[in-house]
Length: 451
Ligand SMILES: [Zn+2]
Image (cartoon, rainbow, N blue to C red; front, top):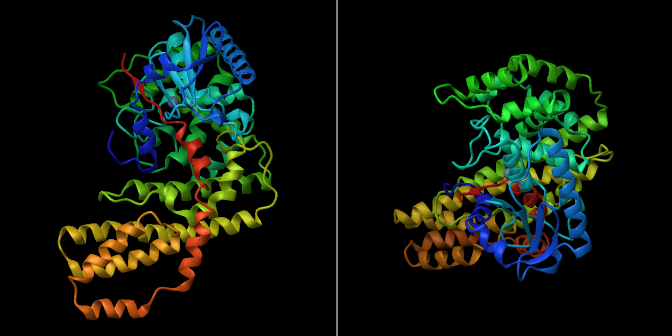
């Protein structure tokens, strides 16, 4: 894992906390045939399900296992321990999974995803290295590998709350001018994770809905030939499991999507979803790309968070942002998106400046450093970013002694705008804006610990 994952990084660090500690120390909330639910010691009470809810979760998980066993046969290899409320938001290690619960989030959001990692491996065997070349993020994990897609697809299936996955996939496909899976696997087409996830999940769902579970089982159990390219492996795996070429199955799936009628409200809703996701992806990747040690964090861009808050609220109201009904009124949301776009441009500038000033300091280029620090200070204030201001001011103060007084004077004469302080005041209120949304995005991160 490189330190390149930006807002994901904090979360990934938690993944190194051995999950066994979670399993050994928690208070038991509920036990059933295949599950032990535990609360991580010392967790805030709103991160722990009540005993009544825990019992409901156990019942739900048992239904999930029963249906999976009905589909694929086999038996779990032991109980699965599910821990709620630890610092590790989500992850899988051996037979212990950390799942999410928050009394502040809608109930569909209680963790299920990680359970599928353990259950599918028990019932079907080790996951196949298929689709892994699509955006391999950190080396050990691909958000779009077959295993991850399948866990999400099963999660959506069992929640029974997201009937519109195929509709979302259809509109995303249309807006992206979706090429063939072969093109995507060969990485000739450059799509973001956000642009690919719904169509790929829809394709896996199509296979599960239209072919017997034995085909999916055969796909999962495909023995990859390392001498072949990822594309050839997928083609071979599909041919063996489904008795048809990949291109043929893809054509079937795409023509089934074309039959979905998409009313204009839906089209607008999904387009808006895509646009807001892409904005978040752009800003996240800029945050991620910061190379110098001092970095801007997404959570501290309070003005941007404030602008995105109403949008995040909409997408947080449904699993993976897949709404049951289309949005009707876009006017305020669109205003917010326009403002968020402006602010993300400003944030991009501030991120660049922050990188430049650190290089200036490294090369002892004091004059340039002073000018850039001065500009950075203004950008940070406009963004409501306060955590770096003391560091910026300290550097400005120190640099004052190293640069010609006329440089200091010429910059100071431009003055600091009064509205900057107003923005700082407004910014404090918005700190929590993106938290929930990103929280949902983070849920995909997953790592299996050895042993
Ligand atoms: Zn996962």
